[in-house]
Amino acid sequence: MKAVQDLNVLLSEATLDQELRSIAVKVAEGQRITDQDALVLFERGTLSFTGTLANHIRQQKHGDNTYFNRNFHIEPTNICLYTCTFCSYSRLIKKREEGWEYTHEEIMEQVRKYDGQPVTEVHIVGGVLPQYDVSFYTRLFKAIKEHRPELHIKALTPVEYHYIFKKDKISYEQGMQLMLEAGLDSMPGGGAEIFDPEIRDQIAGGKCTGEQWLRIHEIWHELGRKSNATMLYGHIEEYRHRVGHLARLRELQDKTGGFQTFIPLKFRNENNQLSHLPETTAIEDLRNYAISRIYLDNFDHIKAYWPMIGRDMAQLSLSFGVDDIDGTIDDTTRIYSMAGAEEQNPALSTEELVNLIRRVGRKPIERDTLYNVVRDYTDVIFESDLEYKGYVPLPVMN
Ligand code: V47
Ligand code: SF4
Image (cartoon, rainbow, N blue to C red; front, side):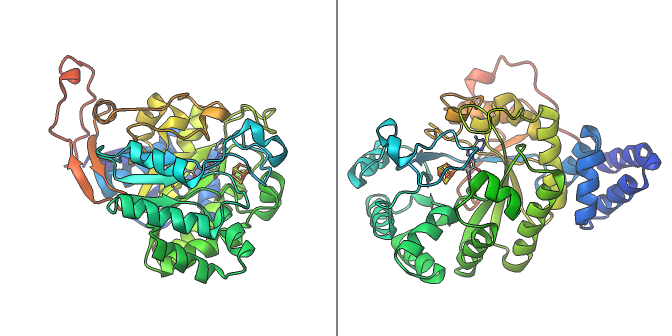
């Protein structure tokens, strides 16, 4: 078996380092790695070592299947009460003329723009402002559902929920129940940043704590619903903080099973208060995907957010544990373009996304938010790709 041969090579490479060797054995035997193992991987795991282990797990979980979905983003406002130091997107209230604040009607206009288009999800997230309260969002979710009942609403993060529930003096439990009844289908993974309180205070002071972020997801999972998780890395945190963050996610996932996807978010340094920090290298980003894949054994999916890392890196990431590319027909998010992301006007047609996945030897599968297959594109070759000569052969799995 090719995967076992790869592992044998790795084992011999790792004979000089007993700890790496024991991690490889654990992965080969399908055992969970410890927090200390994860730290060793961050400190000493080479790109090829971590990549081979992560790809082995990816192949076992998904084969070559690579998922994407068709969604669009709505960002109701970029004015924000908070002042996260990594954020390039928000504007303070005193500079509100530099930003946007959409009304209910303006947001519904954006929703209606996609009428007749085969999108399955709307992703709603933005800044935190008093006028965007419980009543604003419940009315909005209801209006979207009335207009297009089958459209999946993936909206807001514990950062917004914590603020609006506190303002309305209702508990997290009551608040999430209201959201559920209004039509919220799932929660995106944002706002997690780094859970460690010391680091969080420095980069995201004042907004919900790591504990509160986790608690709101837990309550949502207890209501039988799904959510995602992220980690913002590559700023002032150390490897031990990344491990601590992943450990909290794995622990909650053991309890609820409600997370679908983990999305590592590389810190981008343009136009924010941390611009003096250098960005992580491509090697570090791939290692981070790989180690996340190895450590989070109870997460089904690892997602690369292509508008942030660019198309080439998204393709590469598929060999380092990633099985999902956040595909969109017309990505209108500005969170990353304002922070110096690779894609300034991120928009990929389904055809381009399918070609991008196929060209690195993977199988493109369109999914909905809950990973039901919408269409398997494995055997669909578009005319635009007929002349393409550089296909990577699919790995042979005997
Ligand atoms: O929480 C903000 C991050 C997040 C920067 O669940 C930055 O499917 C890097 O969570 N450099 C919001 N990152 C986006 C998010 C997300 C994206 C795609 C898919 C899903 C999903 C969730 O963006 C924030 C923050 O961690 N962010 N500024 C920056 N300068
Ligand atoms: Fe506001 Fe979110 Fe930006 Fe923080 S990351 S300043 S909460 S928009």
